[in-house]
Structure formats: C-alpha cells, structure tokens
Length: 145
Image 1 (cartoon, rainbow, N blue to C red):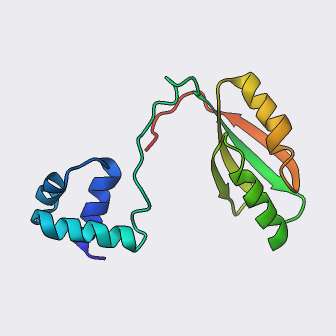
Image 2 (image 1 turned 90 degrees about the vertical axis):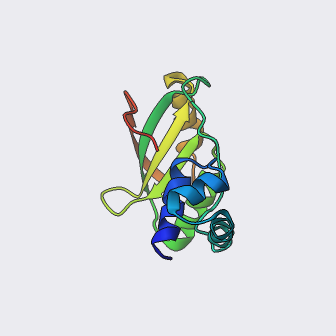
C-alpha cells in the first residue's frame, strides 16, 4: 500500500462513481494503471463494495437512536449469539462491540419514536443475553460520512 493506493481509496471513499479517467487525473497516473490498482485493491479487500448514499430522512426513516447494550454473559459463545442475532435486525444500521461500561453500541434507524419503541421492545431487548439497554435519541445529524 503506497501513497497512490491511499489517494485512490480516499477519492473513491468520497466519490464512489468517479470514472477511471477522472480518478487517474486526481492521483497523477494514466487510466490503465489506475484500473489495475483498483482491481487489486478490490481483490485484496481494501475496497469492500460500492453503494449509493440514500437520504433516509426523505425515505421516512429519519429517526436515529443510539442504544447502549449490556449483556448478561460476555463469554465467546454469548457474544457470537448476540452478533448473529443483531445482524438479522434490519433496523440496526450499525453494531459496535465497545470496551467500556457497556458491551455494544447500536445505531438504530426507524420511521419515528413509536416504531423505535416497538423495535426496542420486540427485537433489541429480545436479542440473546441482553440484560440492559439505554437509549440516546439523535436530535440532528451534523456529519454522516
């Protein structure tokens, strides 16, 4: 991984639809070597995929809550069970294992507070080994990259 690879990754992370020609111009190479580098970066797993950034607010999914989750059991089997189950909940947009006073931090996106309450009560609280949750509702998104 050299500075050109890093420049390619930075450019694509900001604008995933850049043409090969424009990407080449930005990193100072010709098109063919840039295409070869992008294929290599994809093959090595540095580029995991490409996606559209969807305006969730316009889609009616603007309610964001962050949920601290404390588990009753943190042995490997319990963590694995929680991880697998969390992956199956579509409203959980992000799930991070945390080193600190709780075990996981979830970013949950729903249509509104009533929908969030249902997701919390019926899905998140029912995940394996959940002992306690604490919710923080986002009032405004300042930066979302």
